[in-house]
Length: 110
Image 1 (cartoon, rainbow, N blue to C red):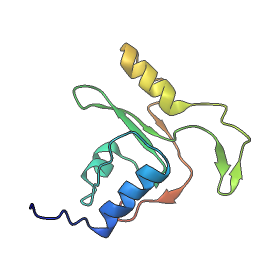
Image 2 (tube, rainbow, N blue to C red):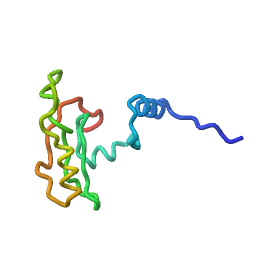
Image 3 (cartoon, rainbow, N blue to C red):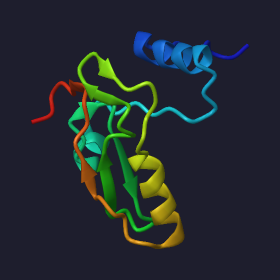
Image 4 (spheres, one colour):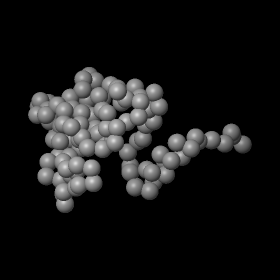
């Protein structure tokens, strides 16, 4: 019989979140904030797109759904992350390399 896998509370929370929301994507913990710093994000939710050679092409909001804290549009009218991914995938330049996001600041990032 093998050694039981003991997960930290944080890892268990991440797996539960992935299950609860039916995400089929890999999750990655960044306790040292290395990826946070490399991607230049400061707010959650914020996203980053890198080129194959690890150049930062985009960082910022996912879309414009939120106008301000507690004020959302019925639906997003711009989709900056999807646009950045499409541009990067086709080799085109990303139109807006950074778009301000609305959310909570990531603790430990200055």
